[in-house]
Length: 408
Ligand code: HGY
Ligand code: MN
Ligand code: MN
Image (cartoon, rainbow, N blue to C red):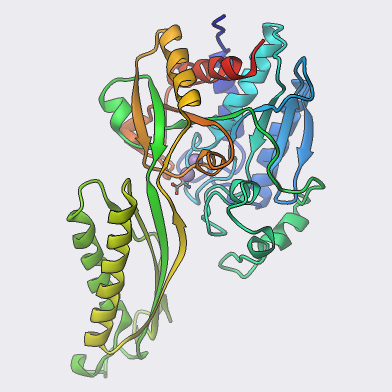
């Protein structure tokens, strides 16, 4: 049995969700566990309640909306993603996966289909890691990858802890955040890259994901006067950082497929006429091969030490997070591929360049992902966009992959 979703209803829900925590250029700003994030969660709860779901909230704020099946004891089929966004995020990254799963529940209701297994929509806490690193935090504690007690102490740049915000926003739920038996987990997501659009392909059958290293680097020099300090007297950390950042790009460009990003760069003090005493910056390196990624990290560490020796700087180099490469489950991959095939959508296998909650859940349950194209491959920017037709196609594939796992 091949069913279709109501793409227009899904698009309308995406656009209504986008009115919460609006960005300055048409995107979204709902950082994890901020009031805007909670407002978005509450709108989702309202919709899921109207669709007849019951709810569970766990001690990491992960939210589960359940649609019962014939066999209420059977392990559920989960589908979901995240509602938190980047600081200048888009209207689809994560949100499409949550509202796409809601559209599946709404469509099962419309078609009066009772699945064998229950179906649950998962809203994972703090997937982005933009406010509280690391990324994929709520799903990571659920999958036993991160320790909740440690994660509770992680702070945002203002020194507020994860636990503080879970309590303040009333997202610290009753259910223990630990894995329960899951029949399968599916996540619908925009590709966040240019491949599907460039090939005019509707569906990405995601076979795996690349590895990531997140690194914090602090360079300590000597603050001084911008006018009176001759250049050869200086121990200027921003000049060290400039050499390291440029050198990191050279290291990465030597490895086809590798990427390197400096997303945060902060000088202390930040004054036009003071040489900064300290510079902090972040590096995000990724590659589909773990050994190559580890070598990139080693080369970066050596570069930091050699530049600091020449510039008279001290440094702290901390890998705050290492995510391994991964392969999704063949069973789920083929259900996604068969669904796309039966629906007549063009499709191709693809490896995810981005991390997702599915990458965490993949460690403990059969997991699959579905990609749809996004305009110019853009994401983690307010220009992120896709089309109602592409959104509908993705939701149709999600519905039929879930049906194939949940039975009916
Ligand atoms: O960083 C990532 O890959 C994800 O989008 N949070
Ligand atoms: Mn995402
Ligand atoms: Mn993201």
